[in-house]
Length: 353
Image (cartoon, rainbow, N blue to C red; front, side):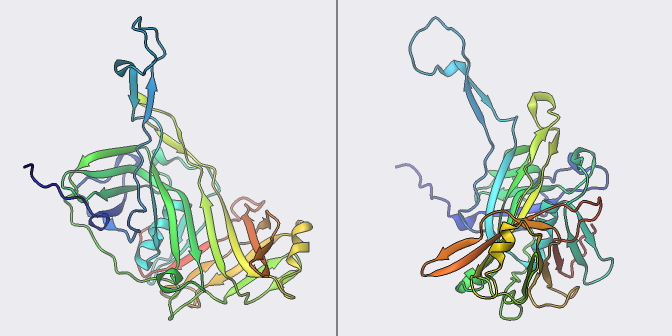
């Protein structure tokens, strides 16, 4: 009788990240397998590594006949294209900044505690291969020794933050999801470093909460303390490969970032004017959404926006009620260097950014 081979539980696995060293050039400094990766609070079964393998059949004549694919005419390409690891989970205070800098690629951090951080998009095209921006190594411990997975030169291609004040249980905490993207994925790694496990300190708790701290201005409609059902920051960096090196591996990245706020609010006498403001193409901005913590105090989390427009018709139905869904496209200001902060976080951690 063959020896038993037990299946691996999803909770036996874990994902860790490590910021690549910018002392010389982070593009050539992915973390080693024995690095002290920081464990992430990601959902089980929500993380599927994709090596983006291209399988082709040579289109040549063989003289052998038959309509089936021929095994010796198959080409396997695991080098070109970008590799990804998606995730979902609950945002924790001690890991939030790394995700925000991995997405926005620009951060301003206070020099002293509690280390307030402001995140916004860069005005210029970034050159990651020459030490610009921020890169991470993402490791996935598969639960089997010597079978770990490492994604190198990674940043966040997609990133979303969601707050649902009326959710119940764990659903009430601020959640995030995204996709790590990099230019090389290696298998059969022995992840034998001492991983760190940050404390699970969540946002939107009974001690600090986002509702009803939402202020919105669209044209001449100025709304304060607006109740909302759902608030989402949704960003996309649209990363693509650039400057292929030997074998077709990406030697740099191109990006074309975009982002929006998606906000579900009730339709009533206070908010009904937003439909006309949308039709007139009025400037839309989320003046502020914060979690009630004083600015630059530990655990403050603030969303802001200065320039944008409603990109879709906000008029919706919510079962028996009329509702509004505001999809506000975050737009670059006309003047160079005039980007305002989009997200602010204070976490008492010196990120040395």
